[in-house]
Length: 487
Image (cartoon, rainbow, N blue to C red; front, side):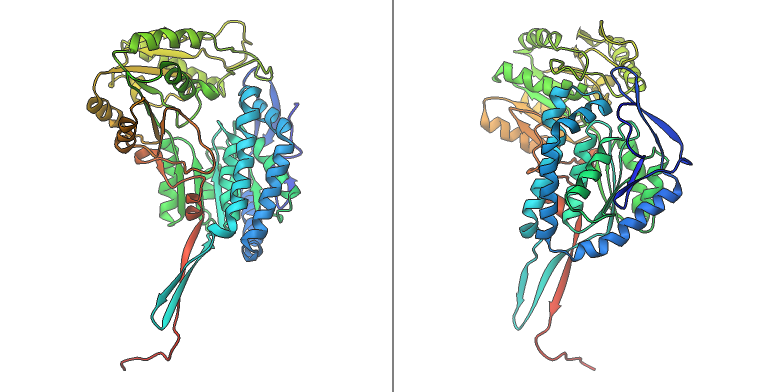
């Protein structure tokens, strides 16, 4: 077990174990090797984590934003110094190639700590409101104990994207990573303590879908932030609403990427591949419905096929590998079943669609797959697959493609490739999405807000916008004269 942590949970600044919790294995998706064995949180562990967070938050909230920010910036520095170690752990946890994790995972988590640590003094200011002789002022106050529930595609990044704004606003966080990727968040908690974060402010507990409701329904939890599927989001939001808790929901998508006939074809293909094959297609914002203008469709498909078939699939720890496995066998079987549905419903398989040769039989590999001649009513064009499956659809008119792109319950992201800047901005205005890219795709620096509309969720991660979702506004009215009453 080459990645076994000291214990399953990190509470009040130390590793804690409770063997009464159900045991589960952390499996390396590339080989099926068990790399760690952990225990799910018992009710006693959950109570301990929340009580620790609640107690620590009181004093943390009294610190100045600048002092809190100093700690987060130290955490960012430590993460960057340990980038290789953290990236290797992320690769073991997720199966993503080391060439990807080393530039996209712990580094983006460090960016979050650095950004929120740096903007704290200005972002948490209120305003002065003159009212004649009287006046008022506003101030941002913390929510209290926040719960973060993570997904398995970017476990370290998500742990930081939720933790950084929560902490800088004066909250405490109890974070539950996905049971598929339990290891990275424990290291983040370690690093925060090393950076000087007071104990109890960032606790990590393990668990599965039975653990989440215990956290969401706990009376001492004031905020829930989930990254996950739409069905899970509905359940969590419903439970939180019953207690009037603050929520952020970052859910799934079936995002459109539109390629016009004047686009730079090489760039459009690059964007489409990033939007479907990065992280083996396991990205919620992926542009999995690629609408290609009929005038360039054949050229687009021919060049896309050649480039897709050149992707290097292999051992994720090999820096030459460009694509690793999906997270587990169940996910691979789900993706293969969608591929079968695509074939059965009449989509044309351009490339992929099978298990690669020369990979470990125990691994969860699947070929990057491209379908053409996909129609809007096909299952693969409507449902989120969460794997390396690209659906290419034809279009020949701007108005038509906008209507079709928006004909989805989802609204997480979208993108366009065109040299016509006026058209690009028309698309940005008309496509129903929380994030929209022009002539690129899936770039999510911490400086910009990220989140969805429609069934893809609500609230925003990252940027100054996240401050609004981890704090609330208090108004103070100051009377400068005598208080009078009419009776």
